[in-house]
Image (cartoon, rainbow, N blue to C red):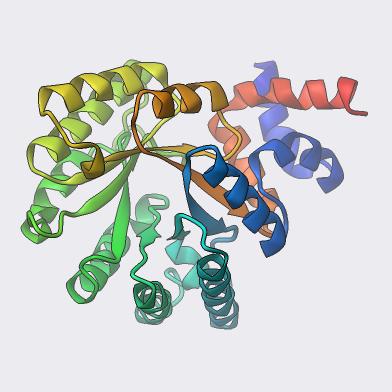
Length: 303
């Protein structure tokens, strides 16, 4: 209850205070911070996916600015020779304002990445966005088959069927590429699994469905039971190491991350940065109130 109380109060705390708990999980506020973090992760055997923080914008002028910021990011990352790709949130480009305009902005970013033979991951947000996000992904995949992937969330009851429904665009030559994660948004029980064991069970079912159909799963988890279950499924299907990867968030469970790398599996770290870090941080705490312990440590041990 104490942790949940802290999580509920956090949006009303001073930003400087929230930063004490947030900074281990965010690369920084600017592109130089992000480049430094990405290079460090590359040196440790990790690929990266770069994410500029921000979502649920109010105007298309913001979407235009965000598009240009992503294009600048791509040019900088490619110039630096970093082993990484990019993640985008549709609401950062006006999904809930003008779906067609949102598609146009994201298409510009995918086209820029494609110039470098690189890849854009379209993040999945809360349930009102799901159908529109899948629609945008389908259009992008048709034009840029090798340069775009999608996020799917295991706690959503529809996800297994979504994977099946999208199988028509999966081919042996160019497999569909999904980041499979548990999901972070607060959704009603009618459409989302709530119990820990239940979510894990469906997460592993989704991985199994991908592997047996030749879909490329990016297994995004910090949960040891999911990692172990994924190991067993990879062995079951004798999946080549270039046909999947694991993913983790920046700053989270580094020991588990290293153990996965040492076993010979590919690892990609999600590197968030930007001036919109506050909303990201408060949402992460609501997702996992146990992180309130980190806040209390920040108060007593870091001033």
